Image 1 (cartoon, helix red, strand yellow):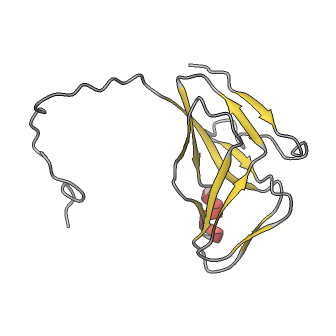
Image 2 (cartoon, helix red, strand yellow; image 1 turned 60 degrees about the vertical axis):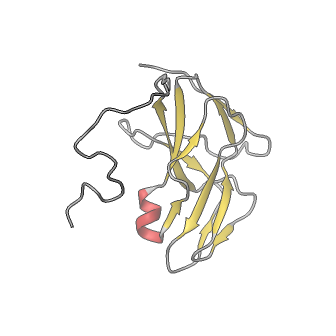
Image 3 (spheres, one colour; image 1 turned 135 degrees about the vertical axis):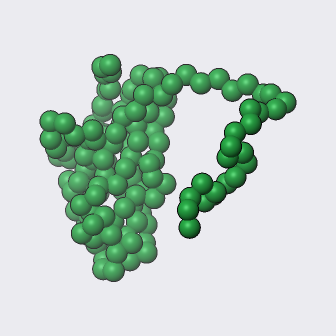
Length: 149
């Protein structure tokens, strides 16, 4: 499968790096901060960070915004609402909701890699209301029901 995604660089962001894969077999495109000046995230603080780009993708795709493992490991910086979903009909700027779960303040600089964007195929799904559902061994068992303590 091959899909074409259109990308628009937003005004004032001509110097911000475009999303890119950092290795030949990477599944995600790194996203860069388009902050006009450095932004500091204190421990426990969250902020919406702009990327300076908008996209248009086919209806068969969604884009997921995911944390960068290096930022999480080294600084405790991760994404809230992860993975964040960008629907195929959204045309606004991609923004990343970051939170500092670390012990120290973390400063985000312009053009710093802040997250990754992974494209996923979205199947066409129909929902049919029924009176009864098929029985399974698990049944209605919920959170932690199948795990061993």
